[in-house]
Structure formats: structure tokens, C-alpha cells
Image (tube, rainbow, N blue to C red; front, top):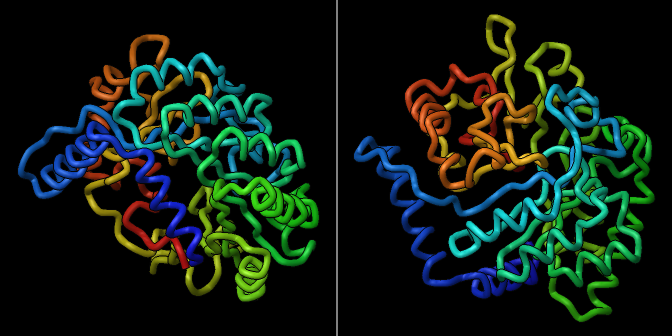
Length: 342
């Protein structure tokens, strides 16, 4: 971890902080603890973070990604700026930040800079997770000028062959050149942001390159270099044998041959309190693990966010999680409460 990550994160947090946002954080944390320990059931009025999906489109064909597989059963498309503006009008006094990723590649949105600026003008934290193929000089300038706080870039291999095994149709050299370009431009513009995080997803075929990845990330000046355990879409023996490392993954093979999370899923979920997910077309979801919007709480065309987030579908889902979380299929493959980073 580099000093710029710590200092930059602290300064961004202080810039964002207001009395109402601090109060909301206290209410969110307190109400979660009360629910967890069965003292009182009263979900907070507002979340701390909002995940917003810029687009479902992606340039890659990653085999364990619903977007890469083009396997959506819900409608696909891209976010209208007006929808984000509506959300910010309602929520900006209470939010801490907006995460511009869910499914799809965010940098494919033609107005991604405008989306970021819509959030930045309220002094909110903003974050993007990208596969890194579109970091042209123009795009790097757009992200910096719009005020993006944090950019996570996935680099899942240190050789073209290893990288392209999962990042199908991707090009490692293009990604590495884009990362260098962004860091150099940020330096030239005398900006601390976006903070650059490099992520390496540990698969069975690439764990031997983790040390090289860490060394390379430090050499080029990334602010944070992290290794993440891999997720598989479906808990099958074939997927486990193909993608999950024999040691250090988030899954294990049970005695009966089934594939399960290494750690037991607890009957609680902090994600349901601290954040919500909004699809490109305005469906409010419990979290980012509801990839195909199976558990939608409602659509923003039918009402405001706060009403939907506290509607009957949301309340029923939360209570089910706190009573018998394993009965929900997306929760059986969720990283909440499990080891995610190596």
C-alpha cells in the first residue's frame, strides 16, 4: 500500500464529509448492529453508497461473467444522464459515493465523463472498475478532469497467453500501455486523482504470476496493488476444476462433491445496509450479486428511490437474509462474510 492511497483516500473522505453524511453513517452503522444482534429492526432511510450501472455492453468475452457470455435475460442498454441526475437530486445530501460499475464495461458509455461530473459536483466519492482497454489519452484526460476519485483496473495475467485465457478477446499490452498513460497524465496534470488500484483475480492458471504482478504494479506507480479470489457464476465441478486454485480460493469441494463457499454464509448482510445497486434502466436491486435483476425491489419509473428501498419487496428480502440467507441463490455465491482478498 502506497502513501498516496492513504493520504488521497483521507483527503477525498474529508472533502466529501458533511454533518448530514456523517449522521447518515452513524444511523446506517447503528441500525445494522441493532439488526445483527436482534435488538431492533429498523433499516436506515438512505444507504451510504450507490452502485450505478453505466452499461451492460462489454468488449470482452470473459467465461465467468454474465456480460461476457452475453447471457442476460433482462433488458440491456446504457444509463441516461437524466436518471443519474434524478437520483442525485434525491440522495446527494446523504450519500458518501457512487460506484460506476455493475455489469458491462463502464468506459464504453459515451458520456462517462458527464456521469462522473454529475456526482463530483456534489463532492461525492466516485469509483470505476474497468478492464482497462479504453484508456486512451482522451479518455484519461476525461476521467481526471471529471473528478473521478478511484479507478480499479483488472490485470489478470502477466503474459499474453495467461491474460487472455480468462480475458478472452483482450490484449494485455493495450491494458498495460493505458495504465502507464493514465499515471503519467495524472502526474502531468498535477492531480492526486483518480487513485489507481490494480487488481489481479487469482485463477488456477495464473497464480504463478502473482509475485510478478505485485512487483510490476509497484514499479509503475500504482497506488494500490491487490489480489482477489475468483468467483464462478455457477457452483459446478467443471467450473471449479477449471478456474479455482487448489489453495487460497473462496470455494471448497464438500464431501458430497458439491462446490461451496469456504466459509459458512451468516444470517446477516452489511451490504444490504450500506449500499444499493441501480441498473442502467432504473431497477433498484439489493446488491451487485443480483446480476440478472432477479430480486428487484422496484423500478424508478414507478417511484423515488427511498420509497422503493423501503418497499415491501426490499423489506421481505432483508428479513429473509437475516433469517435464512442460504435459501437465496445469489447469497450462496456471495463474498459478504468470506475471504475475498489475498
